[in-house]
Amino acid sequence: MAVTVDPDGLDPHMSASASTFQVTSSIYETLVTVDRNGNIVPQLAESWEIAPDGLSITFSLRPDTLFSNGNPCDAEAVKSSFDRFLSNGVRRGDYSTIESVEVADEDTVVFHFNSLNVVALSLFSYPWSAIVDTSEEKLRSNPVGSGPYVLQSWVPQQSLVLERNENYRGECNIDEVAFLMMPDFTSQVTALKNGQVDLILITGDLVSQFEGDGNFTIHAEAGNGLQLMAMNNASTALSDLRVRQAINYAVDKDAIIDAVWWGYGEKIGSHFPVVLSEYVDMNDIYPYDVEKARTLLSEAGYGEGELTLDMFLPRSYQEYVNAGQIIAQALENVGINVNIQIVEWANWLSDVYNGRNYDLTVVGHTGRLDASSLLARYRSTSQENYFNYSNKEFDMLIDAYNSELDENKRKEIAGEMQRLLAHEVPALYLQDPIQIYVSTSRLEGFETYPINIFKFNTMHFSDRL
Image 1 (cartoon, rainbow, N blue to C red):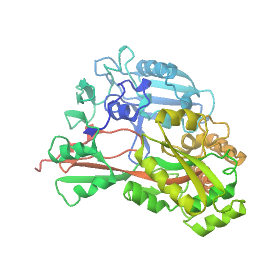
Image 2 (image 1 turned 180 degrees about the vertical axis):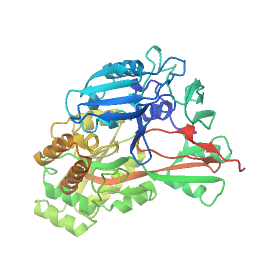
Image 3 (image 1 turned 90 degrees about the horizontal axis):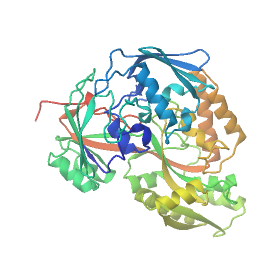
């Protein structure tokens, strides 16, 4: 497989990089994992039981599981791994409700929570919560897990090669997986056509090179993520709902998706990826309507050219720069002046995301498996609420979601949160991006998942040439 960047190490507890998890998900296992629809399914744990009060989860582990070095991957190992994970420098706030980890017996481990976390089970599926052998002190360069592969070699900026883990208990149809570092998409396309690689991720403008060619298979699936133009709701103008509504009416999302992403995107109307089961279609609330936009701006007290907004765009992400420029033109068409400033990513993080010193910005967000984790950033008090959005009703809804044990009722609450964001538009919600992979037609069993993982062990090569 061709990839654009190196992982930043092979220790899943000490990384926040998608490029790391795409490799480590083949080396380590998590207690549970997900299928392509985001449903929780067994992995290291063969079953689990959630206490009636939701304050503990008991996992029954697959017996006789070994790490790649031959050490037992049992309940003690799981406890040791999570103790390490919860105390390291990349600890994630979602896990703060875990109070203790108890070893009930060799194959049973119990997680106790200090408060109700109705989506706690999904926490154990993310690749950063992988079970590692803590007896190995240099996991970054010498990873030891219980997954289907082990590290064979790693030459930074060139290649990383995995080989079959002989201690792995499950299916493993491919003996070796090599990640070849190719930052340039053109070189990746050439490598696939020449047979140097079997799988690449491409952009929409390159799809035509493979269409109608029986030697290749195109895999286009909506990803678990979204792209938006955030609005600083603390800005004088943008604190007025009518201005935010006008901006939403002024922008033709379909045109942006066509121009920037070559039509490969699922239009959205709220902060929710279409791949999640709780998704509700909100696209009809603010259709493209230039005259409606002008009317709302006039009602808000802004005549032609009387409103100027600063838009900050991250230089490292050309697609966001392109989208921002198109949006700016659309806003100028309805009488809003836009001052575009293209900034370095480090400055974007410090000034826009953390400093909240901006009016508009275009960026992407990774998805999660549940509405609570996905939408928590809109809580009034959230440190990640760079929109400066504040709504008591939303805060009450997310609290209700987090205290509701009934899954169907949680789904209803998730829909209400989406509707509120869709009507109040603290952002211009653009799209759920479609990921486009191309593989040699001999590679079968490739699937995408709503978290940053690949399952190479379940793929296989057909006999046809």
